[in-house]
Image (tube, rainbow, N blue to C red):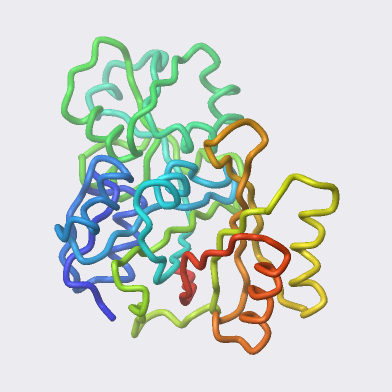
Length: 288
């Protein structure tokens, strides 16, 4: 399925935009300022699907995506897209003529963290200012005459879109930098496909809540998958927001939801007193 219109974390030239453009080249795109706005747009019928960041290889999960998906906007996950991330230090072309030390650096908090070692070593006196996305930082540099000598961290698409100069390429601290995005849709039976990219595998993502906080509870949950040899690619705890020490678990199983051993595994979890909810059954794609 190719959604007719897709919402993404904007503005134009974010990494989310890059993922959408590569995987859904024929779909219309609509930018939103925040991740919750993207998801709300699907619920309200403003767009057919949304693509939002879920996890970065260096900085881990994007908590606002997980929390909003669980607590506020329960949209099914129908696909997963993973793209390589290259962060560059960009400046307004006029700054190259002026020269001098960079005083402030703008970007998304995850991007700044991905480049922490480089920034600490190269610009130890710079102030960091966070923005809603890397492209928002690039747009800020392009459109405003800032009082301080400013730079931003963003991608090459943003440099081109906002006509910024690349002061330094590849300023991220680790080479194997990737971000995973999820595709959200109202219809849980919907799926995505591509003529360009082959599926890297099938996944089922579920939320599991333990019945009580007792010794060995998590071990029991993991044993349900272990003896069936169901491979888990991720297990992560998030607060239930009902009090300290109350958590649920997000579990990714590298199998289709109709795998012969997966439904019995979920039944066993429920027999143990766990609450089990499938958040998505989908194909995973790696975009290069």
